[in-house]
Length: 70
Picture 1 (cartoon, rainbow, N blue to C red):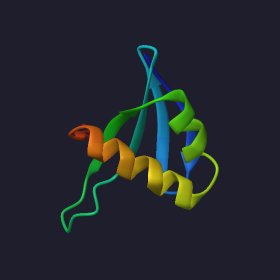
Picture 2: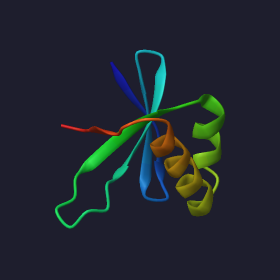
Picture 3: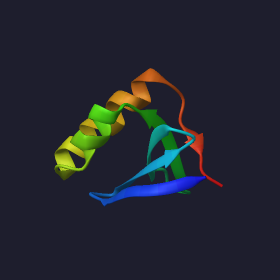
Picture 4: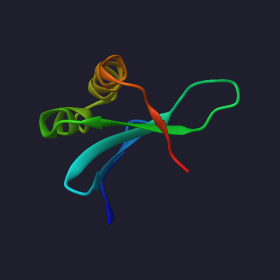
């Protein structure tokens, strides 16, 4: 089951199966929504400001490949 935690600053924070994910636009010309898993602290930070959300997205991208949201 999926639950929306937060939506703002160009991203969504989703809880699914006790894990947190940040969803955002991949920024390509033919764009789609992608997601990366994040920690609870990162999710809280992403809800503070646009700059914080951007930093969380960059950190999540460095850790692993983003998954396309269907």
